[in-house]
Amino acid sequence: MGFQHRLPAPPLDTLVATIWDWDMPPAAHRYERVLPQPGAQLIINLHEDETRVYSNDDARRCTRSSGSVLGGPGLHSEIIDTAEQIRVMGVVFRPGGAHALTGEDASTLTGHDIDLADLFGSSATRLRQRLLETADASTRLQLLERWLLQCLRGSAPESAVAHVLATLDRLPQVARIPLLARDTGLSERRLGLLFRRQVGMGLKHYARLMRFRAVVVQAQTLPAVNWSHVTADCGYCDQAHLTHEFRRFAGITPGAFMAARGPYLNHLPIA
Image 1 (cartoon, rainbow, N blue to C red):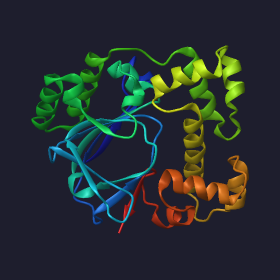
Image 2: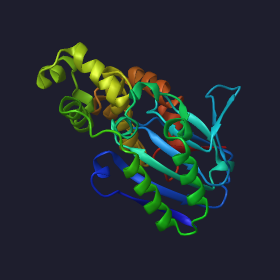
Image 3: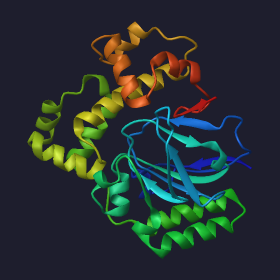
């Protein structure tokens, strides 16, 4: 039992940030809030053949999907059921990586989960069965990596999109879309269409998400946060602007995030 992860070998390393295997006892809390990430994620549940996601409102409505899904990049946080998060494998794609895997318009993945069998047919079904029959986590990770390599239908994002991704990863707080377009030699419209197709969301929304994530990374390990400094460092107009964006992406305030932090950056336990 435990948690293992690995960076895949080339050429997958340019498309995939990590492949992971989670085999742990049930959590003490029932639900977790998962923060939005800029890349798609593949989830294979080896404990239940189901994936459950809950709405952020008080009703906490449940959406049920297959146990093997590809979820697009996140537009906002979602709530998951820890009762099914006991034996799970996953793939975290770099932005644009899922487009290379599926060959599909990445915007069709954004904000919801798609059954792997709908994308890859019986190959996805056979993969889950082989993973269920494999006791060793390292071997499971190797099997999943080989399957990804066999399924590739494309390549890394085009150079213009790659340039934008690198810039927003490095300097999310100072990004200006017209300047980014000028650097690529494309019109804003052409760049926006290309970016949405390969990454899954609009350029402006992606820039806002990366700026929000820069705040989360900065605040995660600090015992206390000077929000005035964070507001200025991350390029927000004022603290009201920061709080608005936090609610938009996380579904909670910055103070609530600090109170709920756990050991994992993107997962917040819900009592």
